[in-house]
Length: 214
Image (spheres, rainbow, N blue to C red):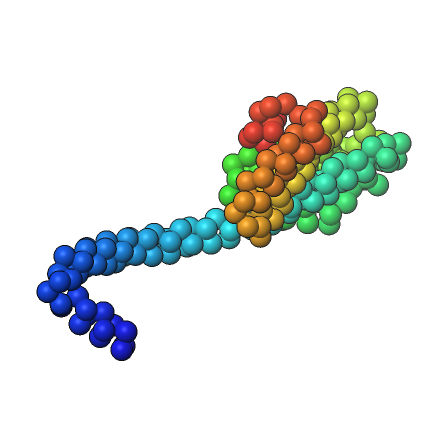
């Protein structure tokens, strides 16, 4: 406080009137800049926090979708392994209901249109396969050649969707980790991650890489 009192007394001296005016102008300018900069920084911090939360949610959903599609693929491969047995022996209603419930629960939380489309395709593959396994007049017979061919087509489709989901999950993981880094490293790490994912999933088409669709 003593320093401020001395500064005020100094500015009141007649020979320092011009300098006092300049000091007041500079002070007013600094105050105006701070009045604009501080709220702007607070808004930026809030926006960054929202983006971080959304990134973490996206990572959780992308990872869940990835593992769920993997379980769907394993379920569809079961009847192929048991193709020579009666279709009643290939049924696993408990596992089927569990997968359908998990798909429904994940769809209710999902924020990605592409992943919702993938989950819809996975559910459709499960339902069509279950219809073949539950044929009421053929429980003692194995799946026909045509039914096995259709099942293999569905397996191929789900496998392609899973590959796209793995790319999506890898990218979501890198994006979430980038928020833990300082500003200079963040854009560099994102660029490196993007190039790495392009090489790792180079067999995917560009629409798959950009939009996660097939």
